[in-house]
Length: 264
Ligand SMILES: Nc1ncnc2c1ncn2[C@@H]1O[C@H](COP(=O)(O)OP(=O)(O)OP(=O)(O)O)[C@@H](O)[C@H]1O
Ligand SMILES: Cc1ncsc1CCO
Ligand SMILES: [Mg+2]
Image 1 (spheres, rainbow, N blue to C red):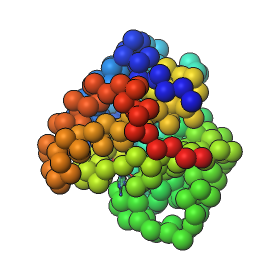
Image 2 (tube, rainbow, N blue to C red):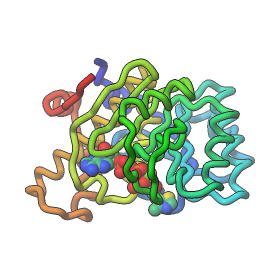
Image 3 (cartoon, rainbow, N blue to C red):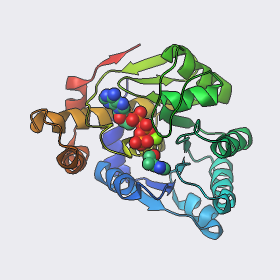
């Protein structure tokens, strides 16, 4: 397992272009900056191709997209595919409305995403497996998480992260489970958005999307565990959030190695 990604991000300082939602761009930009990447948010179609040219990866977050935004998103996706830059999709609340499904399935049909990162409920919708979804939360379902994440990765020929108390990561063949966790991560709206953009940053420094997804998940959850411990397990989402940025900026490969709980 190649856990050196965080070191490479700090050396390379990869530019990550984000089509963000209007709820969490501050968290996503600061989180990317903290790990050593260089975030840029854009919603202007006329600069999309140029931005992708200077970027090392692109994240498309579908959290709050207006119909007018579709052309910009498609230009970003096309440029990323044309220029062979890693492309990550966050299908926020895809189960909630017909509109979200229409947009998600349209993009997944037209463009190749290297990584999809959603909660288990969202990933089940993309996989076409019956699962109860409610808004931005994961919801419950009967399906087996392994089956869901694997089916989604096979369907879209990519790597899928289904996040939750355990993060399940699959390339369609393997399923890797990340058991590091803290209840404070879901207490912060946008921790999922940050995970998606971190996956893009890690894809930018290789060696492959599966390892990048594992490294992104481990970095966020191990940083989250570290600050939770410093807060003596108190439920303090505000302190957690500011401390999380400090941990992301300082976490080392050795610290991740020491506490990582990975199963396959
Ligand atoms: N019950 C839980 N216990 C511990 N960690 C969790 C739990 N649920 C999610 N997480 C962690 O929180 C982070 C965000 O995952 P989550 O599944 O909540 O994404 P999301 O639903 O897209 O969130 P958001 O929409 O707020 O960005 C991940 O790092 C995940 O591992
Ligand atoms: C709350 C919310 N609504 C649209 S996007 C978003 C942030 C979580 O993805
Ligand atoms: Mg989300």
